[in-house]
Image (cartoon, rainbow, N blue to C red; front, side):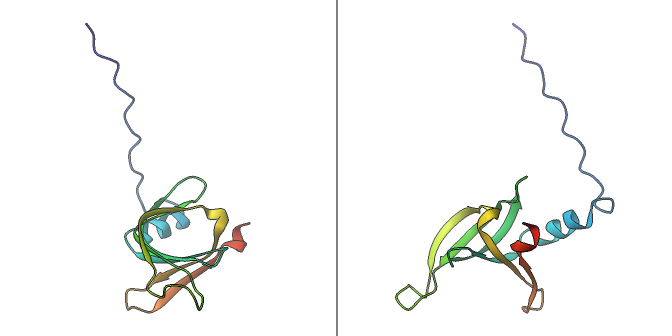
Length: 110
């Protein structure tokens, strides 16, 4: 009885100095707290852990907030959430000094 063939080895992780600036920037955002605003007005705040090919955003330890007079101002814990890029209106990252440092509007990419 023979064992199944081994999968091909994974490609080596590229040297980050040769990666495009956009990839380097995404890597720098890993494990940072992001605030994502989506088209329906909801806001998700959580730890950025990755994205996929279509740029869907994956957050962990996330909370969802709905703004409005009748909404819960404390939000609700949603844990892990994947936010489709097509719904993203704004992405904000908090700087190391606690000041909001980066803001992106998704309409730039559509």
